[in-house]
Every structure is written in C-alpha cells, then in structure tokens.
Image (tube, rainbow, N blue to C red; front, top):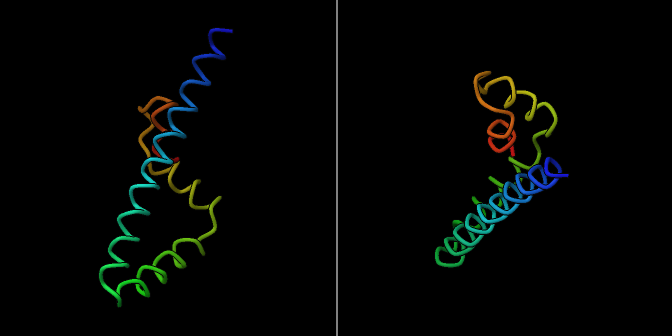
Length: 80
C-alpha cells in the first residue's frame, strides 16, 4: 500500500507541474498575442506545427536521448 501511495504522489506531482507549465506558457503566449496583433498568426502556426508531430515516435526519441543513469522518475518527468 505504501508503494502505491508513493507512486500516486509522484504521478500527481508530475501532472500538476505539467499543467502549471502549460498554464504559464498559455497565458504568456495569449498575452503576447493579445498585445501584438500580428504575433497571433505566428503563434497559431507554431502550435499547429507542434501538434502535427506524431507523439509516439517523439516519446521514443526523447526516451533514447535521455541518459541511462537517470532514475525512472526523472526520465518520466523529463518526457512528460
């Protein structure tokens, strides 16, 4: 049971940090797009390019690029 609690804590922490980073970047890009009128088109195209990448090969490439000496938790956080 204690392993389950620790694993849940790690997963929820990683998810919370990921959502926080996404929120910060979204507010930052949205604010820049609102202040400067021509930037919103560039931001939209950049997001479309990022979203068009297939995710599984991207995750596999990220996993192969990370050092083998890192712990499983650190690798999971880096990929997430």
